[in-house]
Length: 215
Image 1 (cartoon, rainbow, N blue to C red):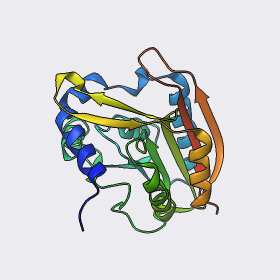
Image 2: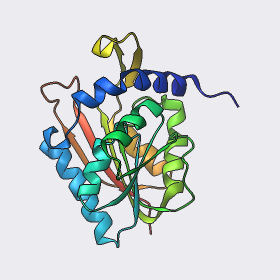
Image 3: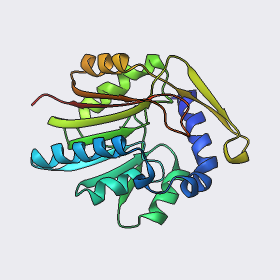
Image 4: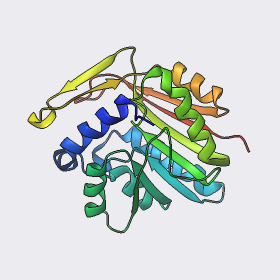
């Protein structure tokens, strides 16, 4: 089966910028405190429900995966880009990382106590998002928690030549109500929505949603 073009473009983009991206974005402690609070809340919810395996889906260079590990979670990182994963494995050799797509995760059914898609749905075209949310529902165990982050807006932002590298990619902004609707359509219950104004180096407001697969 031919791979969708958006997956090939996304992989090529992140393979090309992996080293520079890792050097620029290293420490979650430098992120917005509300974002860190939502990551901590997610970890608390997973632990309160007995813990279990967690996956960061679209983990990139692994910095959020490592942060979740420091929060006490048994976490695996999955990403489309082998180049990003190479930097993740070099930086965090104690953690596990695997190649995979949000459309076809290398995970069994109902195996996760929690999943994090931290700015991972932003490269998927609107018409393919129901497949992504169906896959998220599939891998979550009943009662499992989902944390999503994305930029808020209606149109894509095309990033060209990041770090001076000759690549380009669309970053698709989403409305929180649309993302909540997609989650609900896949059988997930949205429990929390946070929308904050854009930070100093951000181009749009940011949203974080917590959801769960019903027990």
